[in-house]
Amino acid sequence: MVDVYPLKALRFSERFKKEIPDLISPPYDIISDSQKEELKKLNANNIVKLILPEKKDDRSSYENASDLLNEMLEENILEHDIQESFYIFEEHFYDEGTWKSFKSFIGLNKIEEYDSSKVLRHEYTLSKPKEDRLNLLRHTNTNFGLIYTLYDDADNEIQKILDEGTLSEPLYDFKAKYDPNLRFRIWRLSEKDKLKRIRELMKNKKILIADGHHRYETSRLFMHEIYEKRNKKDLNTPPVSFETTDQTIFPEEAVLTLFVNYNQENIKILPTHRMIKFKEKFNLNNYLEKIEKYFFLEEYSRVFKSKPSFTNEPVLIKNLTDFMNDKKNEKKHSFCLIDSKQKIFFITLKKEICELYPDLDESDYDFENLDVRILHRLLIDEILNDNDADTIHYTHTFNDLVSKVVSADTEYDLGIILNAPEISDVQKISAKGKLMPQKSTYFYPKPCSGLIMYKMDL
Image 1 (cartoon, rainbow, N blue to C red):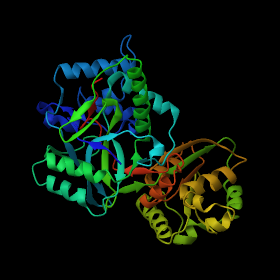
Image 2 (image 1 turned 90 degrees about the vertical axis):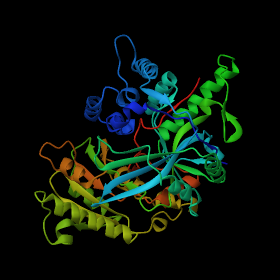
Image 3 (image 1 turned 180 degrees about the vertical axis):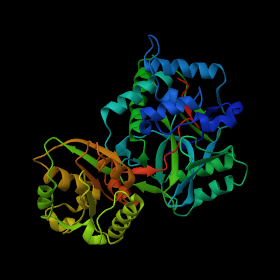
Image 4 (image 1 turned 30 degrees about the horizontal axis):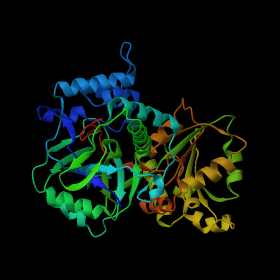
C-alpha cells in the first residue's frame, strides 16, 4: 500500500507571485557554479540560496541555510497554505520543434524501506551527496525540491481527476527564467472527496523513483535519526493529522513527492553519453581491433558516403541521431565512437546477450541487455582493461559531446554515444530489485525547486 497525503505547502507569499520565475531553480544536483551565480542575480530570494547554501562569517553553509529560512519565514517571504491540498503540476517543454507536456500531482509520500516493494528504486546512491543533503535537512527540516516518481494509471482514473482540476485558473503559469524551453503550471486541488479518491486509488499501486534517489535515501536516514530522538524522549512533537483520513504520521515519515503517470505520451528519458580521458596514451586503432571481437564496425564516411563535417554541425548531428534511432528501432545494441582527431565509427553488437553469456541467469537478462551495461561491461571494463579511464564525464546531447571531444583544446580522448533506456526497461529491472549503473537515466524535464515545499514541524 502506497500512502500519499495532501499537505499545507510552504510557498512564496502571494505578493511574490509575479516574481516566481525569478525565485525558483532547477534541482540542486544539476546546477553548475556559473548557473548558481546567475540564479542569485535573478532575485535576492532565489531558492538556490537555500538548496546550495554558502558559508557566512562564522556560520557553516547549513547553519546559514537555517538562518536564512527562518528570516524568510519571519518576514513572510515564505508562507504555509491554509488548506490541505494536492497540487496538480503540468510541465511543458520544447522538444524537436514542438511544445509537449504531461500532468502529475504533488503530495506527501510515506517513506518506506526498500524491501517493502511499495517504493522501487533503480540506481545506486553515493555517500557524499547523501551526507550533504542530510546535513541540509537536519538544519532546515524542509524539502525544497521533489522526488520524481512514476506510477501506473493505465485506466486514467487519477488522470481524469487531474484533468478536471485543470479546468480552472492555475495558481501559477509561467516560463522558467533559467530555461525558456520550460513552462510550469500549477493548480491547487483541495476538494476533500477528490483528495480521498486519489489516496484510495494510490493505495494499491507501486511507485518507482525516477529521479531523486539521494534525496529519498536522505529522507529515510533522517526519519530514523528522528525516531531515535523520539525513543530517547529528546523530541516529543506530535504527529500530523489530516482532514481526509483518520491516519496520522509523524512529520519526518513523509517526503515531498511528484507522482507521474508513466502511461502519458511525453515522459522522456534522455541518453547519458560518456566523454573519457584515459590514464595512458589512447590509440583508437588498437581499440577498434579489440572491439571487432564483439561488434560490427562501420566508419561514418562509408555509412553516409562523405566524411563527417564538423563545420556543418547540424547535418552531422542529424546523421548521428538518425543512425542511432534506426538501430534502436531495430532493437540493436549500437554505439557511436568519436575521438579527439575527428574520427567517427558506429559499432553494433554481433550477438544477442544470451549468446554472448550462455551461463547468464534468466533473471539477469534485462539488466545485462541494457546499452549502458554493455557499454561499461564490454567497451570500458573488458576491452579497455589495460588502459583505465582516468575521468569519465557525462552529457545528454550530441552537440555538447561533439563540440567538447573534438575541440582544439579538448581534455578528452574518446566520446561514446548511446541510446537511452525505455521506461519499461527501468520498470522491469527495479521490479526485480536490481539497480542500474550510475548515470543510466536522465528523466526530462526535471521539476523545479522552490515552487511547492514541505517544512516539517519538528
